[in-house]
Amino acid sequence: MKAIKMLMMAAITIMSLNLFAQDTTKIKEQKAEKLKYECPMHPDVVMDGPGKCATCGMDLTLSPKEKMKREVMKMYACPMHPEETSSKTGKCSKCNMDLKEVKKDKKVYACSMHPEVTSNQAGKCSKCGMDLTLSPKEKMKREVMKIYSCPMHSDVTSNKPGKCSKCGMDLREKAN
Image 1: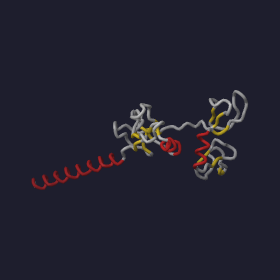
Image 2 (image 1 turned 60 degrees about the horizontal axis):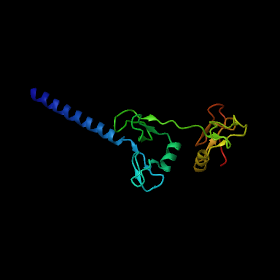
Image 3 (image 1 turned 90 degrees about the horizontal axis):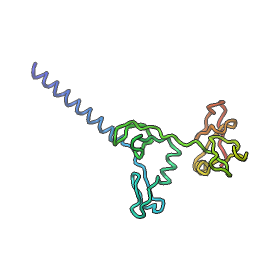
């Protein structure tokens, strides 16, 4: 009887260790994606995190590809290590904190005469009354991907056909 109890304890210990090993493998698989930073003057100088250019000493910035990726898709980042990002929820590989959704700037309209006047929907400039137009960033994004919007609510947009969240009308593809 004593031998059976010892065998069962050994089996439970082995199974527990196996489960723990699988858990840590999952954490490693969920390791946050690294962002690519590059020098504005020397695009060939690329690093996985913020820093200084080895050639000129300038601060490295997110590469244009990384900037576009952040704008188009939902991104998550560590509050303590913003360079630790992922396209899905998870844990920071450095401190194990939960990754938080990176909020995107919704100011897509601006006045051509007063660029500091911005809005998340079409309208008029508060300084001169001119129509607000799409920001260059939003124009570029719409050229890259199809954008659908509500005919009644231009601020309701999507990258696929669907219904307006405000009135239920079908979203229509916007002309580029």
